[in-house]
Amino acid sequence: MNIYDEDDKDPNEGFNKRVSLFKNSATVDMMGRLHVDLFNQDRILLNLVDLKIKLIRSKTEFCLMGDGDYKVVFDHISLFVRKVRVNPGVLIGHAKALEKATTKYPIDRVVCKVFSIPQSSYSLIQDNVFSRQMPKRLVLACVDNDAFNGNYKKSPFEFNYYYMNFLGVYVDGQPMLHQPLELDFEKKLH
Image 1 (cartoon, rainbow, N blue to C red):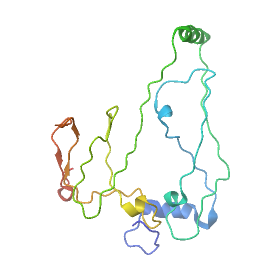
Image 2: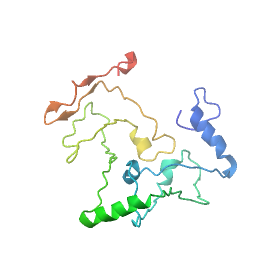
Image 3: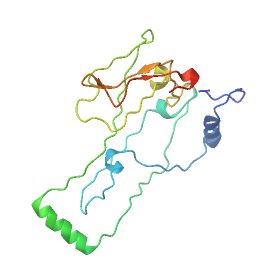
């Protein structure tokens, strides 16, 4: 399911569709959002705020699946920024407020933490995962180690449960929100 094979009896339809888009070095237009903490907040930046954006490419292994000599070439990149016309009265109010205090933007941070579980181990206990602010939402995903480390034949986006049967989140030794989850993926109890 992870590798491109036209004769596959259980094909990965999404992957096969993407392969057909890029056949014969086709040029494709793509558009997406920048997933940055600053852009996840609902406030607008003030006028004359100096904002520098630096984009760094991921490794080729991360975006390509296959053992051929493939590469991704960017022909053209554009950054679309929305501009808002603000009422002059609001601008004057902002200027007066800035005379007394600085601007503060509350930011929802997105943090990705990676933990490796050795193949022979059946449990993982990780202490002090979050040392500062507690998260609002916790998403747990398990992916094959080879896929995570860039094996072309495996997808880093194919998540599996790997026979996980117990999940608990504790804060200061107390279970968070509810009792730990006892999972049974074969009976769809998750």
